[in-house]
Image 1 (tube, rainbow over the protein chains, first blue to last red):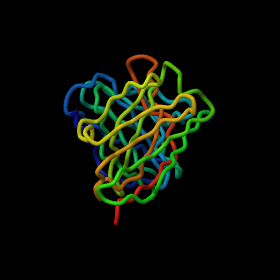
Image 2 (image 1 turned 90 degrees about the vertical axis):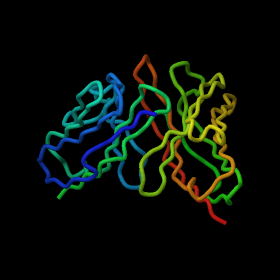
Image 3 (image 1 turned 90 degrees about the horizontal axis):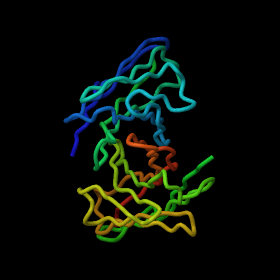
Amino acid sequence: DIQMTQSPSSLSASAGDRVTITCRASQSISTYLNWYQQKPGKAPKVLIYAASTLQSGVPSRFTGSGSGTDFTLTISSLQPEDSATYSCQQSYASPFTFGQGTKLEIK
Amino acid sequence: QLQLQESGPGLVRPSETLSLTCTVSGGSISSSSYYWGWIRQPPGKGLEWIGSVYYSGSTYYNPSLKSRVTISVDTSKNQFSLKLTSVTAADTAVYYCARRVQPGAPNWFDPWGQGTLVTVSS
């Protein structure tokens, strides 16, 4: 199985800050990497697919980059509603695997 | 828009079989561009893909659960189902159904159902 490792596990930032979350795959997955946002008690929602393609309706302050084994999700100007857990997921090979999640708190 | 809704018992006894159904509305489960899958999340933990089914009935499963999982599809009812046998407390989780979008090589899960908590306990 391809292991997905995210860092940090949690972070706290202020509204207006720029934050970056990192996801590393245990082997190359090209750009088969998706990012999800999950708010407490809610289902995950896809933000970015294929490493850098913004899902329709997702604010442009979210950007994804990377290829191979190293990927990043950047939120350019944090908004209060961005408080959530963010998870990466590889879609390169079955079994599809997720990172452990990064919990983002807005101060 | 497309919506998915999980249904099934919220409590299952150890060693018994967990059975859930996902009802798809606002679109057809028989579309050739999509797979349909189950994903679970134990309390306070990360997401785990369980398996997926195509409208034709072809399936593939996470090897870690393969011996206990069956996913099936009923196109006449626009539903797909999950059965997980011989459950233990480790199977306690929120279970989500989701559509896997695969227009080409990239693929992703969207949308998701709201999720249903299944607790394994006597």
